Length: 353
Ligand SMILES: NC(=O)c1ccc[n+]([C@@H]2O[C@H](COP(=O)([O-])OP(=O)(O)OC[C@H]3O[C@@H](n4cnc5c(N)ncnc54)[C@H](O)[C@@H]3O)[C@@H](O)[C@H]2O)c1
Ligand SMILES: N[C@@H](CCO)C(=O)O
Image (tube, rainbow, N blue to C red; front, top):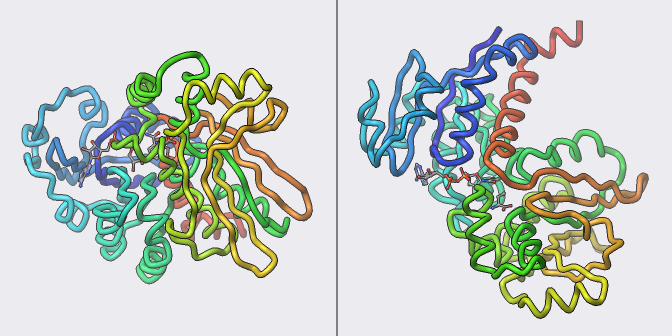
């Protein structure tokens, strides 16, 4: 059995869900995978920070109602969120970055990832900023320090599309994709079809843990734009920045637009897409589209996402699954940790033997 010490950066919906999973599943993971997770540090802008080299009881972390600065009440705790100290000094093997996504410059999450990798710690993250805006730098930093930078949850939360496409569509001639890549806007469109207003629908998505800290990123398409950049760069060999992706969200759609589409046998969906063009460039965009009801993406409802990969050898390969949600996204972090566990040299030696 290998025990991984982990540091949680940000203690909002996703990292809390991971702590809850740890409280409930360590014994099963040990039996099935030969690993256990031990939380040795947590930091959060509002709650403060705590380092506890022997481990913090995960159940206590999720069950205690901490007030602002409340980590000060824990042994080794402080009311200040000293992220740099926690990331550099905590005895963690893996840093779990789940602070808010900054779509403009990716900070402070990019710095969090840099500090972790530079001090020889693996990083797993659901934060789209570092992946969309600094992946080449962070991957090369990870390689230089002999650690991993993993980010499966940055696109379609727990639905494993990045690793799946990289590993199991290798050689199939992947040349494009289109998909529903934002759970909040898809949920909101469905609620508006049912007669609810935009603001009330967004509020529901926030309460369910789907929306970004600033839900403008969801409804204006900025979140999908980051995901299109990530997928185009990871899977199509692009070097896109968000500025390369034309972007329109759903905020301009009215109840009348939605009703008219329904009467005419269509449904509005926010679609992110990219494709390799004849000259080898990549054309990418985010826009609401009116899809006929028999289109494979038209039936995808709620916070579910779907992506259709375009390949030479298989035609379209469509994957659908959760696109947002606290537990669903925490699962992506677990899947990244398992990937790190399974890629350790001794695991590979065992497989080869
Ligand atoms: N919730 C989802 O469905 C989902 C899905 C995929 C990806 N993500 C991404 O995962 C990340 C976390 O999402 P979440 O739903 O837990 O968000 P959240 O808003 O619930 O939690 C974020 C936490 O980070 C803390 N924080 C913000 N800035 C910080 C800083 N500088 N230092 C320390 N803590 C800081 C906040 O206080 C908050 O508790 C985001 O980047 C989000 O885009 C979320
Ligand atoms: N706010 C995002 C979270 C997943 O990245 C969404 O609704 O899809």
